[in-house]
Length: 418
Image (cartoon, rainbow, N blue to C red; front, side, top):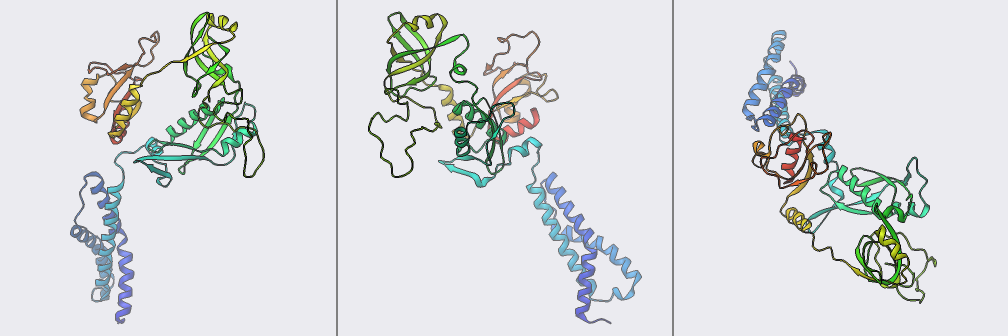
């Protein structure tokens, strides 16, 4: 007869050996019940089930060896089996509670931004994107200039943190194209908001900004302070009034625009080199005012009249208040978000109307606008965006929707519809 410590060791060994299968069964039951029904299996039921399963194995061992039934190792093994089963059940219950009910590859893509890189400013999450590694040249384009490559490598850009990585990449791409006039950009982000940038240098300058059907003309004028590229203006000359769009401006005696100090006195420095080169701006440059020249895009008939003008007066036109921006800000402050979706052919919306689908009641989202899918022979007028569509608006596969709602409701609606 073995001593008590040896019997306890035997009991621990038998308990671990016989408790593997009961623990797996208990953990699986805990996960299944919690995930599908939201109900937690009582601990007493888990203990009874695990003991019954382990008892089958213990009974077989008792038939093979009579000394097993009368030794303390049986009690020790039973305690070990119950403890293993309760632990496995608690882990399965936690897994069933934390695992998302609906997930997809696109959903996993949207949740890959690490929370450690998000900064909250005024209750709004911001993420600062910085380049990682060298800025690479895009195949098929000339190499980037050294100064532009250095500017991109040392830059940083702040964007909203509540956007998926794909949307952040799209916004950063458009921002780089706008700020640096790049011909093409490809951006890849990781979970730490580090960007791998592949860029192509500008293929042209002014000609890329002239709209189709217009001509660029430069005139001498008194440049207003604060003008920026894209401002709408009116030129007053002896020939009359001409409306145009500002493409570029040089004010303050030709010393630059935004960076010009307006003084001929050299700037005193506290070290470094006297480099007069101005780095590429990261925001839209504006004029400092004064006599100078501006380049405007005007219609073709007006271009010939302006070429013979020595001096013109400039009036900047007001664009007014953009009510749509105020509406977006109001909805965002109330926790609402916008999303653009495409109706899938096998989705529940294809072949129904907005009223029949009960989108607002069923999905807790509202359809702001609808654009029909491209059909052979359809005109642009037929494919225009329809705002505030009625409930009788029919939806078909390929139709584009702008919907608004809370983020959770939009995620659920996107999983079902698109």
